[in-house]
Amino acid sequence: MQPLRSIQAGVLDVAYFEAGPASGPPVLLMHGFPYDIHAYADVAPLLAGQGCRVIVPYLRGYGATRFLSGATPRSGEQAALGADLLALLDALAIPRAVLAGYDWGGRAACVVAALWPERCAGLLSFNSYNLQNIAQAMKPEAPENEHRLWYQYYFHSARGRNGLAADRRAVCRLLWQLWSPTWAFDEATFKRSAAAFDNPDFVDVVIHSYRHRFGLVAGDPAYADIELRLSAQPPISVPAITFDGADDGVRPVAKPAAHARHFTGKRSHRIVPGVGHNMPQEAPQVFADAVMELVHASSPH
Image (tube, rainbow, N blue to C red; front, side, top):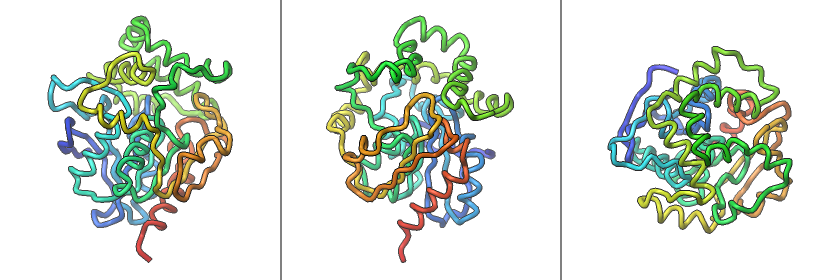
């Protein structure tokens, strides 16, 4: 996905890929951990070919995206991810866009959809309502779900931080395998994305993310107001399509009503057979078709 562009947005110099006509309906595609913009290598051309302006940014701590100041906390909290996405929309002078993502990127999209719905023409969110309820973080899930989160508990410790710093590629490759057990990715595909993990802030941002969501470390004071608003678990009122992967190795398929109360607008939830945690790379046509549903629904008739 070359060439990359860059723009100063908030506290970051954001590196991003863009495709499609500048005048087309804007769509932002947000990657997760531990992935990168190549999760959308097949989705982006499908959308651009249908006239969309497609923007795929590297999140903070990934790829060529950089902090503008060494003094900025390397936070990975959900409020920071949402603020980054909002700042990118502002920097690109995009008043309203379809926001689509999974994992960290889906969380950023959910933050903007929930708190700034006027900026979101439609939301595609893998794993549904993807906002963290930090106040309830110490309430355990069922044992069969708890064991899937071993990596988060690993990152809570100095041993885990050292392990990620020592061999980030081995850790991330294992997560790819565990989270998408039916996805037969090859080594070249992994290496293409793994280059993004060489970002100098990757380890700090990742470790902060997995500690903050459990209330183990403080957040960046600059995002305290956003985190306060998110603590109320605000509903998402924009049109939404949500997905679960039937073979997701980290988040099990949610019960049909589990997230329904969090969506007050029109929402369609779908389960995708044969798909793990990295849906856009495992089922790009299904992902792209859903984005286009939201684009068409948001377009003037």
